[in-house]
Amino acid sequence: MTKTVVKKDENFEDTLRRFRRDTSKSGILAQARKKEFYVKPSTERKNRRKSLNMKKKKKINFSK
Image (cartoon, rainbow, N blue to C red; front, side, top):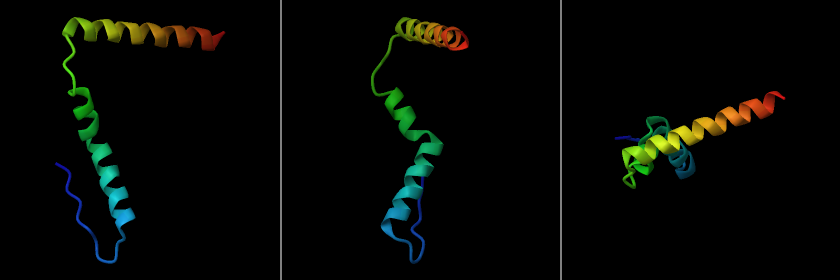
């Protein structure tokens, strides 16, 4: 759990910026988005293979 303490004479925008930076560094939002919907293990493997193939194709096309 991320905890952000408001410093003396600190405006709201700076506090909010610090809070967002801390939550993004801790990975809380990314983890919540990842677990928002259940993905079957077979579908997850299929998506992983598909993304790896796309990366390979991009790398090959980029090197030409």
